[in-house]
Image 1: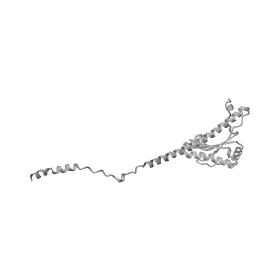
Image 2: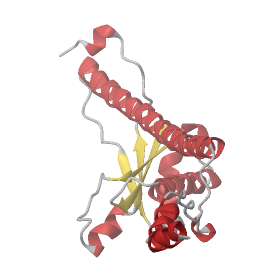
Image 3: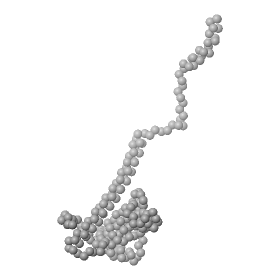
Image 4: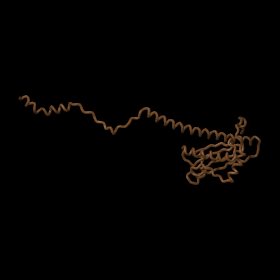
Length: 217
């Protein structure tokens, strides 16, 4: 009996030690905070989509650059041919190529040429062996929409000439979305001048010069 009475003061301490020796409960998880983890397949699919889009942009720009380079080469050959021909036979200097300019409203690709100017343009174009079209914008960044507008402006002028009876086989069209400005692009008047298609009527067909002619001073 005395042993039981003697242990009575120590019971609270024993209970405390027993509670401390029990393993802690695992922390609870708030289901509302869960977020799905990206599956490897989804990540790979998204990466492929980005790569495909970048490839499409690169192909489009490379195609435009190739077309511009080919046209520039044809222009250079034509100028070399005219120069070599004049030097070879001491012929009097002929008039330079004629250039007509078609202006456009902001964002527009509609061709609006006064009838009397259109008649003179078509008549001269029918007798020209090479017609070079250069589509331009007042854009400040090389972005797809500026490229599209520049291209469609050149195509609209080409369609206008073909509808009037000009041989489409003699027409070359190129375009440039930014740069090559003829006016101050910071002013409204300058931007009006920059939204254009230049129509250059060549007096002679471009030819490839022989090494002998090309080497002449």
